Image 1 (tube, helix red, strand yellow):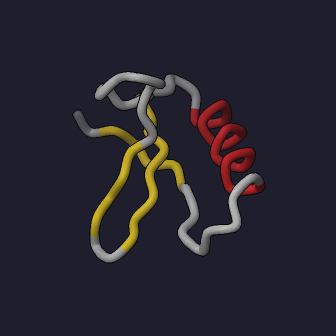
Image 2 (cartoon, rainbow, N blue to C red):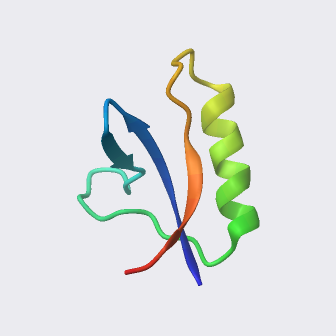
Length: 57
């Protein structure tokens, strides 16, 4: 299974993407995705938080 990092604000989902690209980052390990998600959330002051979801693509 693959995983994505996503956040939702005002009903719109935003997926974490590769730098300078339109392709979404996909993770083979849920643990790796969660580690990055925690790092992203710790470095933002926004109320909108990142989360990990399974990719069904």
